[in-house]
Image (tube, rainbow, N blue to C red; front, side, top):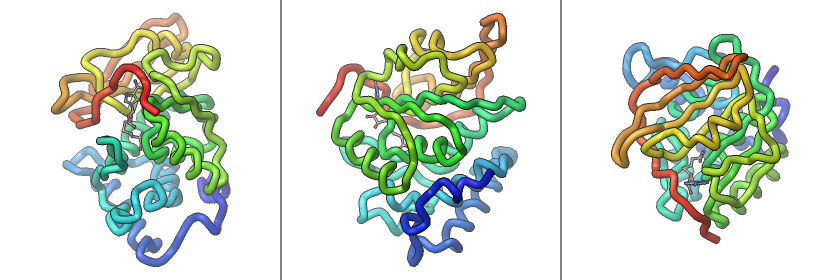
Length: 232
Ligand code: SAH
């Protein structure tokens, strides 16, 4: 499966965001921020190579879109660092998992959701800031990606669409959110940053066929906080 096939070719972009610049990012992701932390899943690397990240940031930051760094997207929020997006996505496919339906909490720019959609997953995403969600929806449309989205407090998940084979939480909380763990299907995987405001651990939870939960720490990450309520 190639991610490229799912995108409108005219939207993928060239120039300062050339394939060479994107390939350099892929090499950085393979190497990893520290030894041993490289991304190895070729499907994930291919999706990152294909989805035009420069369309998910403000024009002022477009020249930096293929650096392995988080960037501001307004409202005090950030588009996640590509390595973090890759790591979370890879974690959903680890142990031969074949997720089909995924829930993302924290749409933000829409980049993580677009990567998941480009990988062929059925994506549901929830964002509490209406303005960010509206911009993300425009990007999904421009790229021809099907992503179902909702303006809501994602801490309640998306109960009507549950259960999900995979859940990705892209904002940090001091503890795992029970409502989300409950919406995970047997055999499913949830990844979430859990910890304090300054730094968190990226946790990977698996729910087995009997509903038993195991967890694994994938290492330190820094995310913006998971907040309550909604903003327009
Ligand atoms: N996945 C995003 C990263 C966004 S940063 C991307 O690829 O760009 C985290 C996002 O989570 C922010 O947009 C923030 O508004 C949102 N968020 C924080 N708390 C939330 C909540 N309770 N429900 C839904 N979204 C939330």
